[in-house]
Amino acid sequence: MPIAKLHIVAGILVALGASHASAGELRLSAAGANDQVPRKLAAAPAKAAAELDRKPAALSWALEADAKLDAVPVPFVRESREYWLDASEAELRAGVRLPTTANEALVRISPYGGNVSALDADGLVVRAANGRAYAGREATQSVADADALRTAGMDVPEGTVIAKLAPAVGSGEIELAAPAATGRYLVHVYEPASTQVFKLGAARDTIVAGESITIRANFAGAAPKKASGVLSAPDGHTQNVDFRFAEDGSLVASIVPDPAHAGGPALWEVHAFAQGADGNRRVMRDARTAFAVTAPTARFNGRVDASNGRAGVALKIGVETASASRYQASGVLYGRADDGEAKPAAYAQSAAWIEAGAGTIVLTFDADALAAGKLTGPYELRDLRLVNQADMSVIERREKALVIR
Image 1: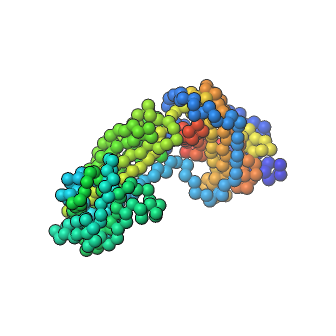
Image 2: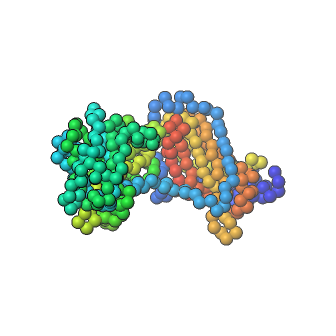
Image 3: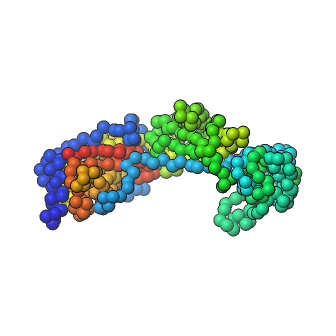
């Protein structure tokens, strides 16, 4: 190993307070507010893990010191300018009221529930907010049927039609009627030009089964009035989502996904239905957001043994398991730049088969990768993750896992 690399690697071990050969046992830092740590383990069916490779694997590479990394979960926030209505034959024939906040809304009408009766755009009647009625093509500036939409790559049911309303229709409370309607239809209203935006997001991208998650909803450009929702598990199980007003005026819901339906690679989905107001105008919006619910089959036990060699710095991390599987650990090692700021030096990832009970996963930070950063101590292990490769679920995640002073 070149002298420069030896100095970097040895420097880390000096910071560990150990000899060049071994640093002895360390402990993971206490879990922080942003960390995801299972409180109790539970066994999972062995079927998903049965076919996994049992050979260990490891990799590591250098990171740019100015790389912008997220050591905490960054949940997805959906922004919506759309909503859906369920309309019966009688309702659509008589006319359904559609609140709009911007001109030239896109209205999609799709038959469902065994209904394949397509509506002709020429037969639509749109009554504007000022009371004027526009019939057929006068009400629209462009129309696309199911064939045209599928040609464009859009997966829609047979009989679907989308109409872009004419500028003359304007906005506000409009009424859409289809005197020839037969059966039930879904009516989808999308307002691309609207400044009234509904936002929906989960507090985390992943939770451990049995824990609660907070869902937050709010409007930009409108005052929230009420919201309701449904949580759907990947297997079809559903739960109601009840929103309440928070002190900041947003709408929040706290839910505990049923742990009996947890596990697996698919996401859970929240579908929220909201109403707001912009002055005297009604604002209706739907939005969906998703998160993962992981089965707590393993967790870090807190013990870390550090050592170094020609390959680099190795951190042997203890793992407690309730189910045998192939588990994966990953993390980023940070060092200090000349100005004292913590900078990422290297990333490492390892996977190993661990039987039910206990085992270890070794994260090895490559000597070349560490030397490239030219960083000094104190060092930190950040964004430490534990993944069950049976379903690639993130079981544990720690923002700042280990400080090497």
